[in-house]
Length: 305
Image (cartoon, rainbow, N blue to C red; front, top):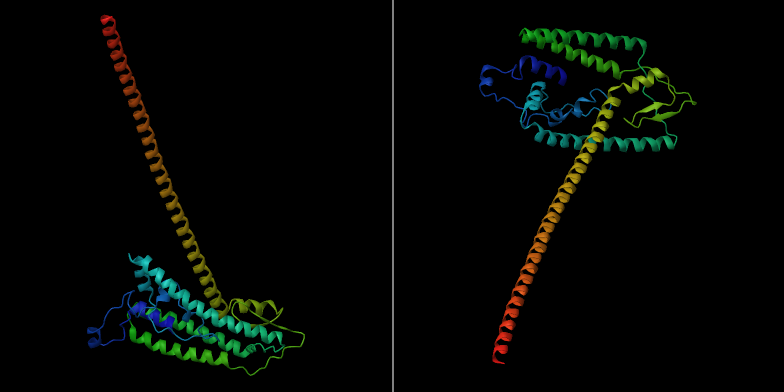
């Protein structure tokens, strides 16, 4: 439903259902409005990952709008706010993973005790066929909704969306109902998926294993775990770069101080050298004066004699 609502918002505007009076008081939402989902702006919203699965956390109560996201990506404030949005998403994802890991630990304990749960029974061929028909009808109706929205036929598009809602309800009913009970032979052991916490039949046939791997719940938790790892790696890299930058700056300051010290030391040596030269020159001058004085005295004494 969220995806379909977002599609209609994009085609016909978020104010498509407002009356003329309501439009007067309508306030346009921008990407930095509090009504906009920060998770969606950063990367993805966890509420969209597990729809109609056992891990469904319900619809998001904030706006998901591709146009707002595009506006955010072009904003000069993008980088600053992206860091904040990514931190919020990482915190939400870590909470999800903590809850999942608790379920995984309990699942391991159950397997260790031999309390193996029964895997969900597969749909019968009849119900599987009915489900395919319903899904195909939903797909065709959504195409028609998009076409009607492009030409501005809002009422017709909304009428079709009601049929889509009815078909979605029928689809959920088919998936929930199952009149067959699957009996697992004793030789088949259960296994636990470490990614999404689902119980599986160990060494099951390739088709069912592939179905699990491509399932919405497995892919969703894989995205959550990958995002956390990527976020932590980026933060660690940023800290390391900051540390290296500080060390480089400290080294440059140290070299500058050493250079200034050498400069002052060299100037002092030159001053002392010139002082010694001047002192020697003064000594030579005093020596010549004494020599002339003694010579003068010797001449006077010779004259007296």
